[in-house]
Structures are given as structure tokens and as C-alpha cells.
Amino acid sequence: MTASAVLAAARAKGLRIATAESCTGGLLAGALTDIAGSSDVFERGFVTYSNPAKTELLGVDPALIAAYGAVSEEVAAAMAAGALAHSAADLAVSTTGIAGPGGSEFKTEGRVCFGIAGANGTQTKTIDFGALGRGKVRAAAVDEALRLLVATISQATPKS
Image 1 (cartoon, rainbow, N blue to C red):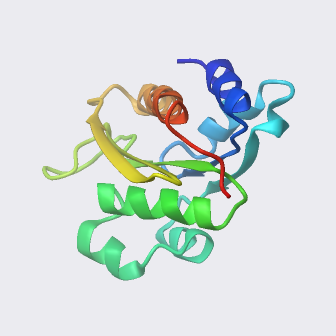
Image 2 (cartoon, rainbow, N blue to C red):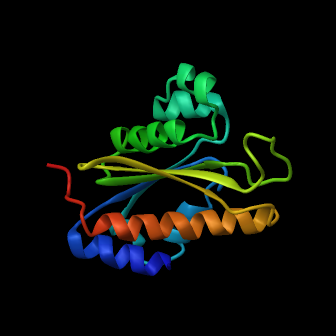
């Protein structure tokens, strides 16, 4: 999926997008804003790499992070909902994961959790991309986030 397709789909429905990124570190926002004219769709991006940033900028409850870990669908959902609440966007997408190197037996290298929030609620998804290497995991996460946005845009409505 391309960022151009996301922008075109959102533009056609009159939707604005925000991003909340951890493991992708702004690459998703960068992909969207690399395209001239994206400012009519891209509302803002949050790079919340640390847990305190997730709490301070997006309102993610520290107890949620303590209970599930930063790399979890619960935190991905809270990040997306927080980006939506702290912006004028109609849709917000989040990424949190372990790009590598490293990981644990419970949360392996290449695991990325996604959240997407809009007027119709919040959805989550986890993909284990595997130990592809840091750059490839991050690129795959950006591609998946763009796919999720396009899939969600078709059912999304602007904020009232």
C-alpha cells in the first residue's frame, strides 16, 4: 500500500489523519508527508518512543503499560485513541513494537501491535514480522499501518 493511496482515499471522504508512533519513530508520518499536498489530510503525528511520552502526549495510563507492556494491543489501542483525542483528526493509527535487535520469549523481535481509532471505535492488530532486521521490520510496520488506514477509511466518517 502506498501513502498516496491513503491520502487519496482520505481526501475523497474528507478525513484527516493523525499518527502515534513508537517503533516506527516517525517513519509513518514521514511517508505521508513526503507527498506534496498532504497537509489537507495529515493533521499531526506523535512520536512517543518512551513510555513517559506515551503517557504525557497521548494520555496512555501508566498502569496499562505496567500490566500489558508497551508492546501490546491494549497500549496500541490507547495510543490511537489518545492521538485521536489530542488532535483534530478523524482517524488515528498507532504502532508499537520490537523492531530489533532483541526481544524476549514472550515478545519476540519483529512483533508490532497496531491500533486504529475513529468515530466507529478502536481496533487493534498484531503482526509478528520475524527477525528481519530493524530497518525491514520498521518498513513492514509502516506498510501495514498504511494498509490498515485504507481499509478503515472506507468505513470512516468525519468527526461531527
